[in-house]
Length: 104
Image (cartoon, rainbow, N blue to C red):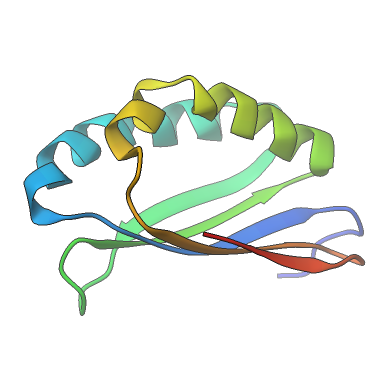
């Protein structure tokens, strides 16, 4: 799929410890629903990795940096943020026509 310049793409994964998996899964369902409803969200997918227990593959796209920033701000104060606080993540964020950056 081709995206126009300025589109923000995030891909990577989150590794959820077994003792936090149930709480994360509960918070994740609402997080996905709310994110998909945000203005500027093109897609937002968080799927269990069939090969790695507790790992969720993440892929998302937002129409521009402002939409991505709004998502980050909303999510930062959500039940999802509380449930997933401190859990290791490995994300690559890039802007179509721009630079790549890693976030852990």
